[in-house]
Image (cartoon, rainbow, N blue to C red):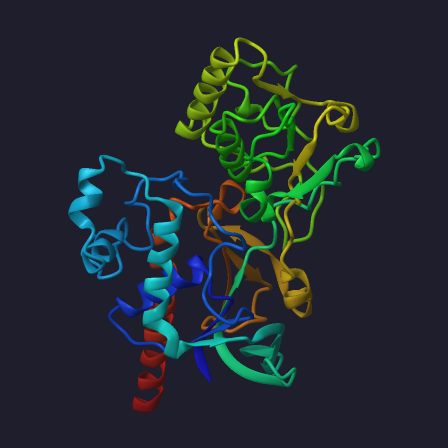
Length: 405
């Protein structure tokens, strides 16, 4: 029996691990991660790209500035604290922040089962009341195992279903047009940056932080021709070149997913990255004497816009997590989810169906399409840790009172 079982071991679960270790009571915790080692991003980072948030929004600082797991303490351990301070930038490099997460994760390796995928969460009942949760998981040899836990922390499902990929039926592969996904851009970017006559024209189809980083990298190359961005993200157009914005109509949804009417993940208003992107675009237009530049279009026919491009870089869309299948056996018990912050939901169950000391949380560290940590991740992890510890204390006090009787 574990006190807590966390499905996955990404930044959100890592923040939970840190908060629990720094709590006043030690709990027995297990983390089930399907990957063979810790990583927070599926793709490599483009050099020089930075996090959207300042370094204080790490896994611990906002909750406990004296924590041994702050970004500042990581820099001290890596002997780069003074150099970071002298760089006069509050936003860490993505590559360095990834190393910070790996540095934190290495200190919890004894509690993590890598290469083990959680398959199902079911209720363990006694007299029609849930006393614990059974978590079934598959190991690297495809063998099934079951562990018991009082509390379960699972990741959020995707905030919205993946958009239908744009139709690219007019692509002329014989003329040299090629498609590159954003996930493989870092490994194929050198194909674009050589000397070509005439210059290569590029179209980028997508939205969010990764799109902005790729655009910024493309605009920094003087050898490229015209760059076109096809997007539905209004924050890519500070001068409001788009038409009137219409909010999507809210629709019914499962309790395990966010309503499709929610605001789509997007860039922070007026972010430094977007400003830099437009600065590079203007410099490109000046140097090329108006022959090359950046064009941003929305609500357009994607095939028509990409017809004159040699390469098309497209977003693969958001891949939803399989949380619905993981928790589907709890549908009969659940009433819904109560939000406890941007990165945390607690599942509420029917009255009397689940013991007070058995909770299920949905937690995610992601914002901005997965490119940044949610700003409240450290404080949210602290809330969960305090809740779990207080429930454990209540249970022990109850047993002592029963012993006295």
